[in-house]
Image 1 (cartoon, rainbow, N blue to C red):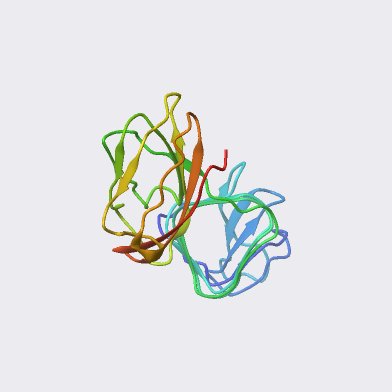
Image 2 (tube, rainbow, N blue to C red):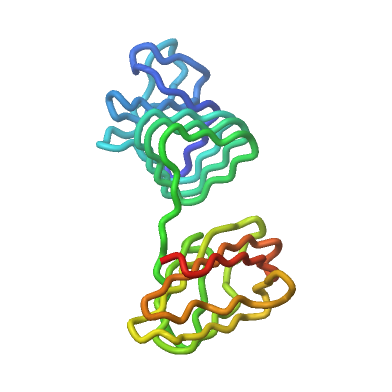
Length: 209
């Protein structure tokens, strides 16, 4: 498959009836093919036939409908409506129109490494969990994008009585950081939204488990 795939229109169709302008691409989930229209009135050239159709480069399209699993290892830019009726595994997706998912959508919970200073990398996950083995500092996260949001679960170890201080970019109501639940194995949730890459608003929900 070519390293760069430009989608002028994303559709799903049977390979025998697909028509369109040269260069347009269809994902045929029935036959698990990725097909580019080569200028003929029907059919087109098969780019890939795999168990899961995949694009290995950057894709861009006005509208893209996915009815099966599509894996995109590069970036996807959609200026229209992106509709997912199956599963989609992607690198990065920028959507300036509507984003519609008929199945479940979720963010994986990444585990932060415990240490005297804990530094989340916001380019890896939106949601995190960390178990405190001592009194710690939650440092300013790296790779923050304005508008990003998620939750950080802070778990006490079997000893408990662990405290957490915060970097200057974490912002709390009244400028007062919450006091964590210190019971052994207790769980507190810090819900955050990044207003900018240096200002992250936090709302805490304490003793949730």
